[in-house]
Length: 196
Image 1 (tube, rainbow, N blue to C red):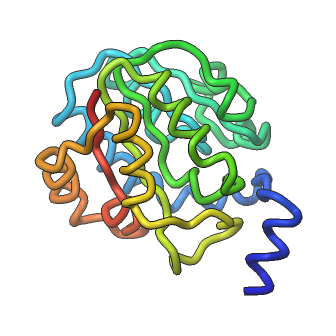
Image 2: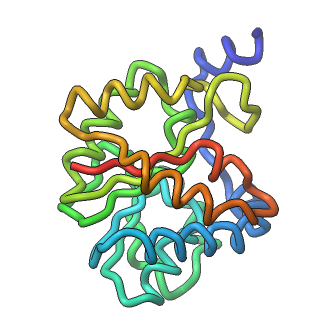
């Protein structure tokens, strides 16, 4: 409890290059996630809000999609693939721009101050033309810098209030595709496919 309270006082931790480098072990799992989204959702363009290493962006770009990402830490650029480095904008999520067929936000929400939760939802709804892929750590999920772990129902209620609904069928299909993940099981456990 003390650790969580002190994190709230200090605010979210910004990842450094060594933190992003340690995420390389998740690359294959993100490629599986990207393959699932490419197979299941019709989209020509995508933004990844809080893109970290840019694993999703890299796979989407390889598949011929127009992509961009935002990341609060400039250190992400040190480890991002050269193919996507210039497509990552270093900025707070609120500064994300454009309208994209698919807006992704993967394991970011738990790192933002709780009072900015609905702001994140507003930003994703604004960015998305059709689809939102969203994951967020629930209470009790460990992780570095987790200061805003909430039940999925909280996020779903905020999206519903903005006329964005969870597509349960597509969510279950994506979860099925992710059964083989080796290093990032939370991608499967926490995933939601939302539609406007």
